[in-house]
Length: 92
Image (cartoon, rainbow, N blue to C red; front, side, top):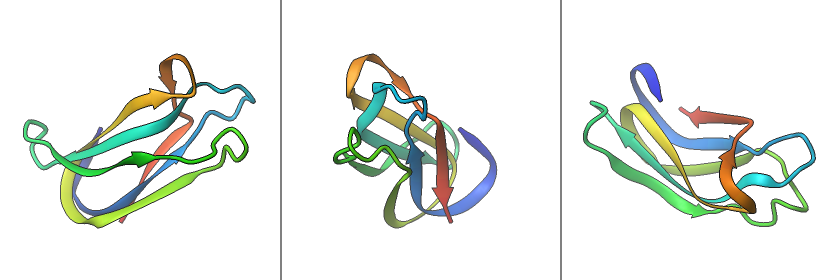
């Protein structure tokens, strides 16, 4: 994702799908940032706990980093083999 300008990021938010199904709901992730869109650094990696019972916006803080681009990479989903995301946001 190109944010159009360099920003100082302090974390991100992930909102899982909101249609009542768990297909593609991301429960493990990697979040990477870049200044140029070519060289990437990992800012966060982890797991969203208990999304089946509590499918609400998740907030993941990390050490501040300057970036213009970011990648949200789903490394595991709850059901099936695709990733579904309602919204991704950044914390400045």
